[in-house]
Amino acid sequence: TETKVLNLSGCSLDAVLYYVNMDIPILVILNDQSSYLITGFNESQIVLFDPSEGELRKESITDMDNLFRTNGYRFITYSG
Image (cartoon, rainbow, N blue to C red; front, side, top):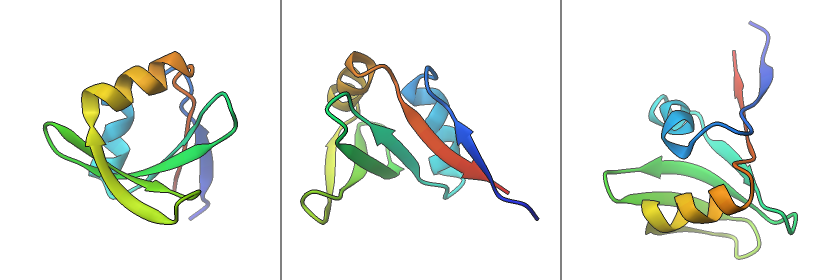
């Protein structure tokens, strides 16, 4: 099967968490060109890989949704 890059920019965090729920990580790009990889979530927290720190961490979904919205909801993932 062919793998395709999906530009999900403009989609809400709730919408892109569908892919995370299917074990497909989401790349988030912020306005300052930093990025996170969303790898998991539950009702209140999101699990992020922070490449600048080289570690996984848990953050509030509400706080991260506010950050991602402020940065234009720039999400990328893949399918296939």
